[in-house]
Image (cartoon, rainbow, N blue to C red; front, side):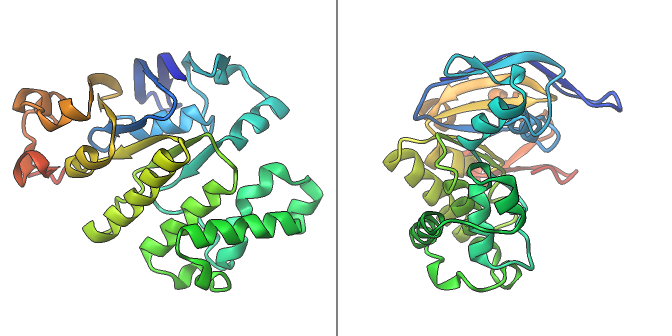
Length: 266
């Protein structure tokens, strides 16, 4: 189980990204984190895998306080937390295979990682991951030769190489069209259901939340303002919607739509 307790993150410029946030996630859940840009979704995910350090509070995973880990303990913990990024975070000039193999860096000696040396077993794991994501035929292409949807599949395959127990997906479909968005979400759903992998995924689009998430939390200005399961999100009231997205926000396409207003909020 993942448990966030009274988490606060204040950046050096004084910006309060998360304020006294508490919630828990059971193993095997698919949790969607919703809210406007700047609501604290990305900060939350990056605190969980310690890409950034929280200012206050604790994050417990299977009884261990992640926020207290350092050195080897932190590196070992990160092995089991896969990360999928909005903008893919690939080495664009490197091949798909090289990018996927990067997911094994946490299991490789520093010397071998510098020389980009991976074992035969790692190469076999990479082949299996690419086949599972439908990109095996693209293995020798440069990452920047691929479409956005294909690049995100590379990102998921790279995360899969860590043999993770939890996946953090930071707005993984924000730059993709609706068809590709569902394709990527289906891959995450497969990992959640078939591999019993816990998934935390920040999203803007309520139709995707309703289709794929088992549980939902809503953030506004770094605070928890909504919490529910799949049934709750499907019956979200206008008042609850505005509590998350603001009084000026409107739904495009009704309850299944995205979020927008005259200011261009998503």
